[in-house]
Image (cartoon, helix red, strand yellow):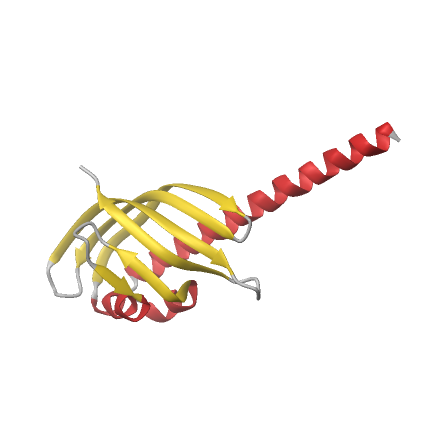
Length: 142
């Protein structure tokens, strides 16, 4: 009986570890797709990744909702975009990502942009199993 219990605990631990890895891989993949779509000004590719009530907070305190963020994406022309140094921490159906965002190009107003920010994204897994970002925030790095 003791041997069976130990085997069960080991098996459950392995499954939990795999589930955690799976969440991390899924979220990191979504973050990379988001970065690629941002570089391509492809708001249609980003739209399903963002929850309807998505909000982003910028270093200057500005807020944008989903529609505004997608419109901004369409108007921006990025030469380079990179999301790196990402770490995912999951809590059931919620995952928090921290990382570094680098972007160079022209913003939605046609102004030159050369950013290096620390970001935090909050993702939620809906009842249909789809991960969507519900909130994003960033701070300028020196």
